[in-house]
Image (cartoon, rainbow, N blue to C red; front, side, top):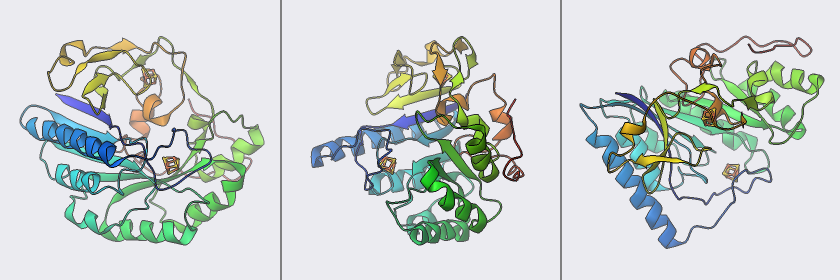
Length: 295
Ligand code: SF4
Ligand code: SF4
């Protein structure tokens, strides 16, 4: 069957220290890193074992930064070559080297990159983006919509190749005036989808049917936000639990969740690039003050 898996292992450390980081940052001990590597290798072996059975799309969404660890780079490159893997992508701050991407299949691998001003110089980040473009890697670039980030976002939009989508995430807990939202929408025409949390209670969501979240121990849940387990990946118990099901939570405010809501048109908007957040066509940008409202 066609399945999308969002994998999040125990890795919790990051080489950056963003003040707005939504995750509790930790230092991972050598033992913790070993456990993360083991969990990732077990998951990757399961993906390999599904050849001839499933068609899989995988997004790695670590709490910390995965690509500074060799086992994430190697796993992504290896999985990208499997015939039954349609897409393998990871969320990253792009601090890693880029030479490993030469060993990946660029028609399958993709990167969801975030620029964090204050953590790395603008030029260093955009040099990495140029590497990705030269290697033919699919990638999106994003930034958190804080007022002090707006000049960086505008500069990125002006300097990134036109075909590279620049997304803006509404900052957690921040309310945007219409004027502020217009400024961000002029950079990212799809910002209105991120501006407010989506009311999701009772609405049909593909998670739990064709999309699941998997943790390092193999516990399968419908998504990262609903804690009730559906079973374990490695004993197959989760498969019988797959079925259409409404969202049990009041709101869904993270792109990796609400993109799967059937009440939103985002599978069409991001057709072919749902996991790495690349729209089917880069939407035209509106000038400041021209308001765009999603359906
Ligand atoms: S790069 Fe991401 S995970 Fe790392 S500190 Fe910043 S927001 Fe947190
Ligand atoms: S709408 Fe969001 S929180 Fe609700 S089930 Fe879907 S992904 Fe999970």
